[in-house]
Length: 219
Image (cartoon, rainbow, N blue to C red; front, side, top):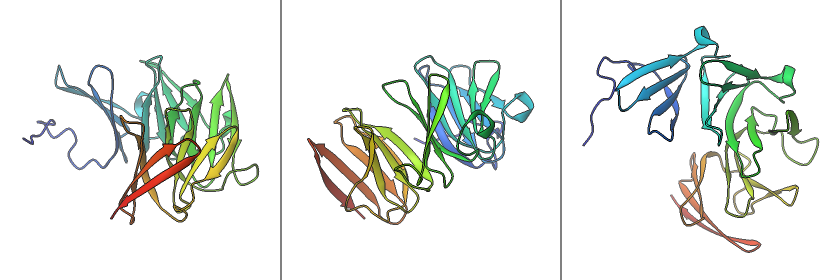
């Protein structure tokens, strides 16, 4: 059964770019022009976090909650915002981030924050500093649209037109057979497989097997 949650049209005409469900089953909704909208499913109330509250940019593309229960918002033009519950901390090019237009944010099992930048590869935030990977040092100058981690600790990157890449044993590698693919989203499934939603190439499943990968495509 489908029904509206915004009974007062709180989300009316808002373009949604990402939805994150937190530990309490609340929804955090990234929007094109209205910042982040939080929906409390128990109270059935909406709260908006925008530039007026301290968000660095109202165009938000990605949302993440880390293991300390803090939120990270990837914005288009304002870098990454860390939400501490009431206050924001902004990380941008002045902080060492490679770019301020962010497409993806992911915290891995080693507590590293991976950030996909527009046309500038990825940045890693660890121990209070950024390390940037691009075409100058082993990766690519490309939009990274989605990031995931598999059971073995390998980091997966879905790019905008340059296929799928992984970071394993301290180096980047391209997944053969997927070059030129435009990736919209990467997720690890409950059985450890990597699922990839694409623009124009349908759905792709990758089964990691030791040092090899079995690729299945639909569409």
